[in-house]
Length: 544
Image (cartoon, rainbow, N blue to C red; front, side, top):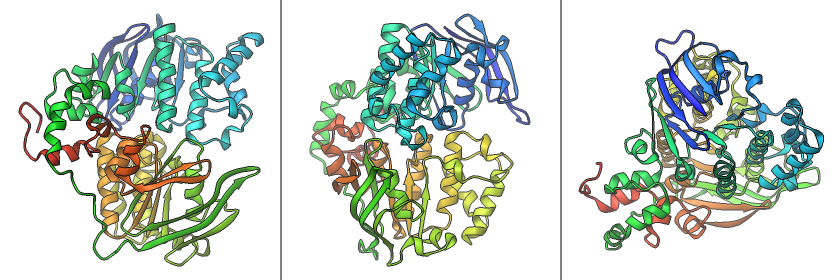
């Protein structure tokens, strides 16, 4: 169904090709997972499937990409729309109508689907994607996760033979992600849909994959069965990392498979003390630096946040979790001071953020939004970094140094709009963290980041907390929460319904428990690093 034959892609001005002599075949009715580091070329590979690369991205493509018998070099993307459906990383950028129902119908209108068939398919997709309550809602008013579900549904409504997905679950809560993946898997198994999917949150999807494409970042690509490909891949989910550590063979790809292999490990860990929680840094004493009471956020008749009382301590990392649309982003913007607030009080070190000017507020509190590209406005990455240094009154090179920690290898001369979504996020993170504000608010900060970049972000968050900063992270990334959070708040329908230490809250929730906790339950371990520290010595046959 999808065939790459000696494909090489080189962008203008690049010293080396992003893809070099790539050959592999994805047969009909298979789910193929594309993995690799941020910026390794995954999006380029996906774009070649429907001729976006190189027709819209520029550069040159040598070799042949064939989809459903059509050589993409002979067709424009519009001429492939009946066989290839594409969902990009930023769903809002791809919407062309105003409401959910209109967007679901739009693609079929362009393909001249009969009105009676169109109405039937719209209703089917609304049920399949869980969009009934959103049918008439404006697309711009939806949460990031809701927009992602609409984007996937609008493509599925046209019933393509091939579905190309770039980070399809990045903005979804764990439950919604499972529902979407179950739907995609059912379409693969029952209808023979061929899916090519790039995803950084491999813990969610690897167990569904029939094959894996590993994009190494040096232009080379490997394709094969999931376990052999992930055995030495540059990125891997926690279940695979745990299997590598313990030398398990065959390498497990799901929690269920790993639990079958885990009893000897659980027995070893039962006699060893678990790692102690990270202590609040000396000198901060857990003093509250942000205090909010009675915060209410409304959008017309919709109450997004309903009377929330919450405080955040110095030196503490707090994760804000909950279903899509539960009010997490609205609460963050209200805490930052720029967002609408119908009622309530917010103070940072005794001062309301809205009482300060833009620069003074930035020294108090920084917020990285879900769509970080909104904060990028200059012509080059170097200019963005230099401007951030000046505005933050920090030494020259501070922002650039932070960027290199998140996503190394981005040239100063690159245009910010030409970066991948993960690279854009890394740049905005660096810009917002440069002034080291008292409170740092992050809205889905790991979206588009690979595991190595998440580890670097976790280190930076740990450093900021050690300096006495208060960090609040709104996220669906349970693995990241397990790594960085001291405290977890659970939101539902605009209110806080859960609040407690990370280990207590996430382990108690099947939806928010990380893979290691599920594998080793009832032993109190959240991450592979926790297990490695508890074992204390190398495991025979395992990777060091």
